[in-house]
Length: 126
Image 1 (spheres, rainbow, N blue to C red):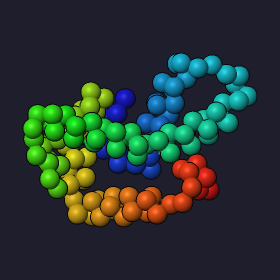
Image 2: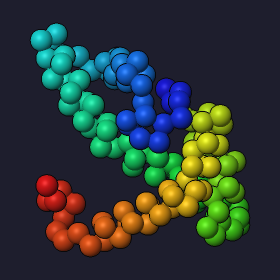
Image 3: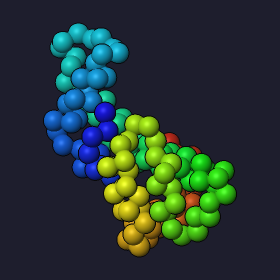
Image 4: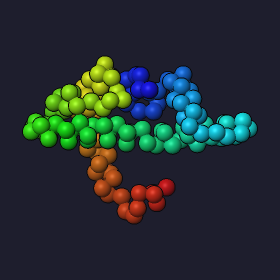
């Protein structure tokens, strides 16, 4: 189902969002009158989990590289052979390249620091 160079939910075109929702509909049923509400809830949920999905894929690739005694350091290029099954190589490579940029690494580092400063539980921050 991953058929684009999507770094965030905002990058997923509407026709792909619709296709993903149609796949979701294959597993669940509801009354027609509830369709728009369910789509809205589904999209909000997916939007919130999208970055976590990519983080898990990246972390898994790092773990697999580490198990092969491959040193990563600050360069993520060595994770290229460890792509998840659900992302094709044509999309995995540009994602890894994007994660390897100073810009992305800076944002990632800042976001980690911000999460570390948060007081209270994850679900109590508004």
